[in-house]
Image (cartoon, rainbow over all chains, first blue to last red; front, side, top):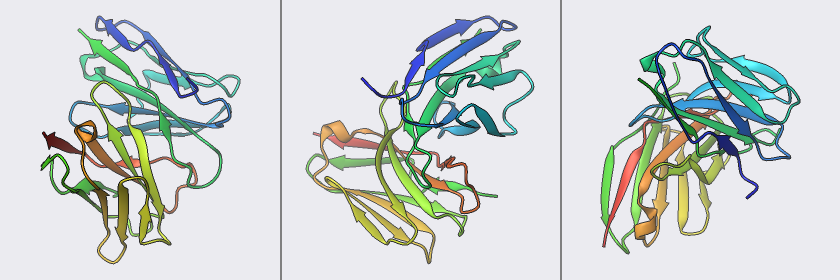
Length: 114
Length: 114
């Protein structure tokens, strides 16, 4: 399968703990995106990478959130001091660098903060 | 600000009938639109896209129509099948954005009755 891969699929953590998610994009895609989706809502943009550079961050991304893409391939999203409001599906997507290329999504990491 | 919305939260159709899912957008500068299908527990799956210089685009059993005058987008599914049951999202890319990020609506749930 050469699609976008996310790990883990599910994560249950206690409030206050740190969690880290990984995304492996489609290999030839240089753009990578993180989105968050809550139940019954559409995905909300969090952040965007062009190769290894993080070029845009949403206001939704508080100081407790950090994302990296150190070698321009896989990416990690870390949430520090998790809160119950962080419970959501975290989706990763990738695309070609051409203008108006569709985003291809992984199946997400579902985070539950207890 | 930008917003993308769908007219109906749930659409129920009979197997074999045609389905039409509607979407309204507010940013007249948007130049690229995409429809995604999301099944339970999975990430959004690309269906079809359309650029603002087009009014209509056809794929396999799907057609997207774009009416820029009234800022309306629709997805037509021909001969709807049980496997089409899912949540459908429209998404737009802002005309001023060069990141390729997408803004999603809230989704319409399509239920196909056998």
